[in-house]
Amino acid sequence: MANSMLKSTISNSDQGFLDYVSLRKDFPIFANGDVQGKPLVYLDSGASSLKPKSVIDALTYFYQHDYANIHRGIYPLSIRATEQYELARSKIGAFIGLNGDLGQLIFTKGATEALNLVAHSYGELAIQPGDEIVITNLEHHANLVPWQQLAIRKKAKLVFMPVAQLPTIADLDEEFLSRYITKKSRIVAFTGMSNALGTLLPIHAIGSFAKAMGAAVVLDAAQYASHEKLDVTTLPVDFVAMAGHKMLGPTGIGILYGRKELLEAMPPYQFGGDMIWRVTKEESTWNELPAKFEAGTPPIAQAIGLGAAVDYLQQLGMDRIRAHEKALLDYALSRLDKIPGMRIYGEPGSDTRGGVISFQISGIHPHDIGSVLANDNVAMRVGHHCCQVLMAELNIAATCRVSFYLYNGPDDIDELEKSLQKAIALLR
Ligand SMILES: Cc1ncc(COP(=O)(O)O)c(C=O)c1O
Image (tube, rainbow, N blue to C red):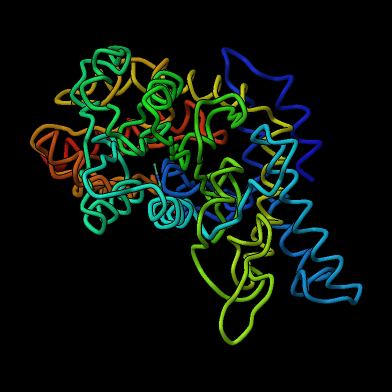
């Protein structure tokens, strides 16, 4: 199983790199991902990460040994399934620093649903006509459209902080923040790490400033949580949204962390089974947290799979994962920079950038580059990356985006470079 492999990878780091060659053996898709003899070069973890065998095994084991619906049965199988589901909650809670009240950790079907939950439920409670909701101009649509629609519903104003226009994110200071976050701001929602550019936003600076202004702070950690250590108890945030499938877990599972007082005051997001306490013909009352926000049969197996994913990440260590990605970013940035006509978007160095590089090559459409790379079995994303507002601000339609994770190594960057040179030779 993964554990024995992990021991060797931890002790075998060199220049910050994990032993990615050994780690790849934990991910069965590498043994099955060849196309016409070309091995898989997976540079699309920003869209979704690959899955280690331990996660796949946890899902299979659960379906084969412990599967039943939860919270409802008094028979042994249902009790076991409920225990597994709640064990996953406590593992994931510990992973984000939440050792206490697990009512603050709600399972959703993804980061998108977690953000919609906050926008609908907290938004309903907190936003009045004329209030302001502040986001940045590099948000994923999942952290933009719910706030835009809330602002429309409530006749509030959506304010965009133009962080993408700063020379570097290190220039974001209080003077900049004070131009956008004011006493009128009721909610400030921003990403910890941009999926399109990789930019790591200064969570402490933005969160503290927003809180001092009296706003609730929503952190979109869909990218951030898979790359950086996250402790929700020490960050100046009220809500955090995460995506299980980007952090080695299955699809169909996300996390919402919310501060207890706020979650308790908020109305339910969806109605149905499990979230109620008592129902009569005339009215209903609501269950305690977290059940109040988990209406219907939840993603049981997916939560258990995410528990196994978190075990894997924790054994490897988020600090080591970050160090590996930083070393890989330094290598990749130095190699890509030498390609003629290359334009790299986002932060200049790896200190303020997570494992993402967005680029264009002059005179060649990103989709054409993507097609040549696809032929070489190099998986890279092209397009607007669900960031149409950002693309409009940068005055471009699309970029090529490569995104890294713990199983990538410099050999992947070498293959990427070779394939890009081939694309240039073919298409220019
Ligand atoms: C920064 C960011 N936020 C939110 C999301 C939405 O995540 P999901 O599609 O898993 O709900 C994504 C997905 O790419 C993302 O990158």
